[in-house]
Length: 315
Image (cartoon, rainbow, N blue to C red; front, side):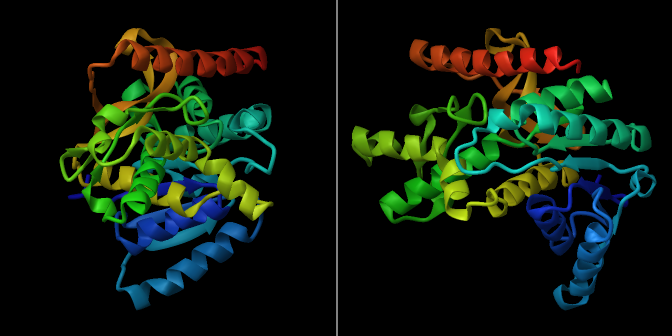
């Protein structure tokens, strides 16, 4: 993909979408970035502001905003960030009905213009919106992936680095499951410069870090009051974009539709995948303990309940 012109559409010109577009343009991961939003003037204004920053940054990416999906035609990657943000006291699941309507409309219009695109879903509740995008676009599962585990892992790594007072670069970690309270951080697979985390921190400190990771989103929501996180979600999305555009085949935890993997079917949930130019190239199978498998199955059951609600709503 990197050897030919790359066009990326970002749907939603709010904090997450605008920051994603900004980081893609700044790093020249695309020749053209289209920022789409239903609010008149917002994507156009933000797109022009970003375009005017390109000469300072030495980037030749052409970025522009629009209210029309015609301008998104023949995109290589479509990123859906549109939807309502959480407020204090809300869970991600509380956004299901409202955001399902928004995401379904966005996905339907985008795939009509770009039938060969890869879709990255960022809107909450993430796992259910990934499932919805698959249903609406009717694309094969390798071309629709949800951004969740990359963000959750980033939070987990950040908190470990804070605790150990070491570089985040030396921390390798993996989380599975749904994006929310039922996520499954795999402590056994967490290392610091190759050293198992369990050799560096006592059990109670690790448990505290795991819990803070699960509460990572709402902690920021409670601080902001009228919005939710966007810098870390945007950076996590762009990491996925880079792996696709440069065909890096990074092993990243992403939301994918299961078709028998880990004994799960017809549910989108976070699993370790190899992400390359064709999207999901492989879903990796790792050994789980009985307790870890039980947690993953419980997480999948939570997502399945929300998928059932989605079906009840007529999607």
